[in-house]
Image (tube, rainbow, N blue to C red; front, side, top):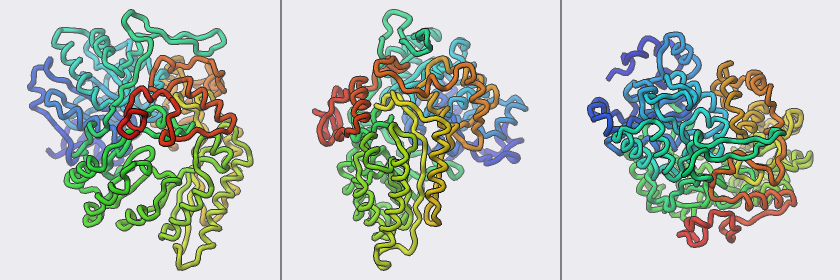
Length: 623
C-alpha cells in the first residue's frame, strides 16, 4: 500500500513535520486486516494500544513493543498502535474534524473494544485526554456508554493514578505479560454472553492486578487531607494486589520488534536483562515497586539477541534494566553477545551501570565496536547525603571507576545528580562541584600516554520529586525559590570549558510532584489545564506553567508538596505492591538518621516482597 496516498491523511502529510510518524507500515508491523474484521464480532477483540506522547518517544519504549507483540500472537486479537499527534497535526485534525486513527488499519480509536494506555510519567496526563477526545471517546468514564471502548491504563506510574482515575475504566498493577490473555479472554467471554459495560468491569475486577476506580470512593478530612478509599459494593477487595511474574525467563520478549520509520529517541534493539532492583535507593519508585529483583538467564538472552539481530537491522543493542551491572551472569552474557555483534558492527550498550559494579575490563571489551560516553549516577555530592538516600557508593568508588575509564580511553563522562533531596544543605551542593573538580584533577594527574587527549564532563541535574511507594513518600518538595537558588549556584560554580551543565526546569517539577502524590480532586485540575491548552507537558518547549498554576489556583500546591505525617493516609494505601508501608516508614526514619540499609544481596531486610519467594528473595531461584 502506498502510505502517502492512504486516506484521510494524504492531503496533509506534505505540510506537517515528520509525516512518517503517522504512516505506519514499518518493518515488522502487524496488519491483520481484512481477515480479522471478517471474524464474528463476539469472537474477536480489537485492542488500541496508546502511548500518550509523540511517536519517536513511544517507539523507543520497550513496553509498547512487548504489549504489541504479546497481544498480536492471538489470532482473535488485533492490537493496533496510537501515539499523540504533534501540535501541527493536532491543529489540522481539529480544523478538519478528523479522528485519531490507528497506524495499522486507519481505524478511529472510538471503534476499538479495549483501549490501553501505557503510562510512564505524570506529565503525560493531558495527552491521555487529548487522545481520547481526538479519538471520539468521552474523556470521563462516567460518560461512556455501551458502544464506547473500555479504557485501561498501566505502567510504572500505575501505583498512583488517582488524579486520572475518573478518566479510566480500569487500572492494571504490576507485570502485565501473563494477564493480557486473561483480559482479552474475559472481554470476549462476557460479550459472547450478551453482557454490558458494567458486566465487563465486574469481570475484569476478578483478574489479579486489575483495579476498577469507579468501584471505590475516596473520602477527605475537614482540613483537606486524604482520609481513606473504600469499595462501594460487596465482593470488591479492600486492597488490590499487583500482578507478579515469578520467572522472568517465561515472560515473552518481542523477537520481531517494529522498526520505526524515522529516527527515534532510543534507536536500538533492547533486551530487558532483569526486572526490579536489590539496592534500595530511597528516592527510586521503580526500585521498590518492581521488587523482587528477577533475572533472565544468559542463555535466554543470547537466544533472544540472535533473533533480534536477524529481524531488525539495528546498529545498537541495549541491555536494559534498572541496574544492568548487577546481573549475575553479565560477563558471560557480554562475551556470548560480542561474537554476534562485533562482526556486524553492532554497538553493545549498558545504560544502567552502578559505580560500584563498573568493570573496566568488561567495559573495554564492549567498547571495541564503538566507544560511547560513560554515564554514572552519584545522585548527591557528599557521603552524608548519599547515606541519607541509601546510595551505597563512595567517592573512592567514583574516582576508581573514572580512573579506569580514563586509562582505557574514555573522554566523555556524564554524571547525574538530584537537587532538593531531603536534608540537602549548601555543603552538599558544594560537594557536587568538588567531585567534578576532583575528577578533572584526576584526569590531569594521569600521564598523557595513559589517558585520552581531552576530557568532557557533563553534569546533569533534576529536582527531587517525592514518589509513592518509596521511603521518601513522606518527604516535602523544596520551594521554587530554593530550586532557583540551587540551579544558579551550580551554573556559576561549574563554569569550565571542560564541563557542561544541564538542568531541569523547576516549574514542571512542581507539577509532577503534585500529580505524583495527588488524589482524585486533581482530575478537574488536569481537565481544566488541558482545556486551556496544556498538552505534551513533558516537552520543555510545550510546557505551559501559567496554565497549570491557574488551574491549580483553587486547590493550590502546598497540600501536595508538603511533608506528610508518619501516620497520615495516602491515596494509594489500598494498593498492595509487595513492599509494606511499615518497611517504608522504617526506611524514612533511617534516612533522617543518616543510616544506610544493605542491599538484598547482603541479606533480607523483610521489605514485604519476600512473600513472593522468587528472584533474589529468600526461597527464590537467585537466593
